[in-house]
Amino acid sequence: MIAAVTMGLVGHLCAALITVLGGYALLDVAGLSVPVGMHAAFWCCCIFAVLRGVLRYGEQARNHFIAFKLLALIRDKVFLALRRLCPAKLEGRDKGDLIAVITADIELLEVFYAHTISPIVIALLMSVLFSVFIGLYHWVLGVAAAVAYLLVGVLVPLYIARRGGRDGAAFRTQSGALSSYVLGSLRGLSEIMQYAAGSRRLEQMEVKTDDLAQVEQRMRQNTGRNTALTNTVILLSDIGMLFLAAWLYQTGRLGFDGALIATIALMSSFGPVIALANLGSTLQNTFAAADRVLDILDEQPVAEEIAGQPKTTFSGASVQDLTFSYGDETILQNMSLALRPGTVTGIVGRSGSGKSTLLKLLMRFWPAAPGSVQVSDRDIGAVNTADLRQMESYVTQQTHLFSGSIGDNLRIARLDATQQEIEEACKRASVHDFIAALPQGYDTPVGELGSTLSGGERQRIGLARAFLHGAPLLLLDEPTSNLDSLNEAVILKSLAQERGQKTVVLVSHRQSTMRIADTVYSVENGRMS
Ligand SMILES: Nc1ncnc2c1ncn2[C@@H]1O[C@H](COP(=O)(O)OP(=O)(O)OP(=O)(O)O)[C@@H](O)[C@H]1O
Image 1 (spheres, helix red, strand yellow):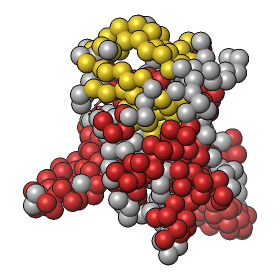
Image 2 (cartoon, rainbow, N blue to C red):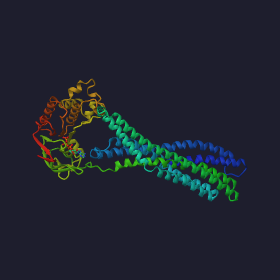
Image 3 (tube, rainbow, N blue to C red):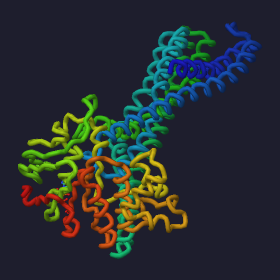
Image 4 (cartoon, helix red, strand yellow):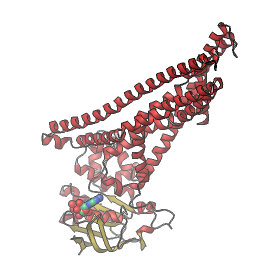
């Protein structure tokens, strides 16, 4: 930053001094006494011109190095924050808006780091130097120059920023909302087509785009006003300086050389403060983006990651007197159950009764209180999160597939798994034959969100992941809901074979699936029976 400021300052000095030296050259030709003669001025101008280019490049290179380095660090911090916040805090969050924060908003911070900090310091130093230089000819001119710099570099941008009001924040929020709407439309394409909602959605998209365009237009008008106002103030300052210098010359308090050089010096030295003036219309937008990024960094997770506790190995789990609510809505009440090692426990209950919630509490996605969830006779709040993830495999109702091959999607459960282990897991999940019959086998790409696979195929891949993971506690949420009875039978047989080695919790509405359970609990009105 010091290098950027130094190069920027010297660069601007070079640019401004070229004009001042031109003034000295003219005075030399006119036969007046000057500190720098015409020849020296000519050579200095040549050197300063080249230096100006080199130093400008150096300043920009330094500033952008800082900016992109900081952007990388901020991105890293944001991804870490997202990891801490998930899944509880991210579940209900608008994903399109989140993508806008992670991409566009962070990107905009580059303006702050590359084009704000050092320009402010450069403008300040340059204004002081030139006010003093002009003031050496006459103190009144020095004060006038300082006032002109203050007007252009501080008052104009403040006024413009105030006029911009909340447009910057509105633009960021609305662009997040638009990206969310587009993402939702892409994800719900089949529903939109089935219910002929395409034109309505398009209309709404146009309304949102128009609203965004209006805010953008207001922002651009503000930028235009900013430029016009800045240029007018500069012009008036130049004229003011000219008249002031002429008056001082006429009244004999200033020589002709002083009048000329002071006016030229002011005219040629506005560059750094103009850069500040331009910030007036862009900084609002940048601060709005920074606010959105900082909101994520400041957000507190629902369940903190736990580390530094003694290592836990699985020897059963239990839930005791657990009551759990999402906000004011109580889902589970005084619930107790025991998951004995090596057994299959079934959980049934009507839709919305809290079965999936119970599995999420066993994963400690939410802290469990009042009451407790225990793993290996230890409160789950005192088990290292990494140990818990090692001990538990959770298969949700919606298996998420990442874009990539089927093999890649399976391997996320265990990165060092061999092909043989992957195939073994797939056989147990009754999906190996299907994959092997594909032309590219395990290298078949699954498309975005697994769009090229059926619901049942995705579900079986989810199960295969859990088998591959090899955790001692399997939490399966409706693992057979999309399967025909043949595939269901293969999977149930695999699960039954695990009895004795693995502890399985099976949430299901299907009676046939529940047949393999040693114990079946029923969740009704938040209570267990
Ligand atoms: N993150 C959340 N915030 C607020 N409410 C939630 C959240 N997740 C689930 N719920 C609500 O909690 C209740 C229990 O949800 P849960 O998914 O545990 O039910 P379930 O028994 O698994 O239902 P199903 O059999 O239909 O899968 C539902 O009314 C649901 O709307």
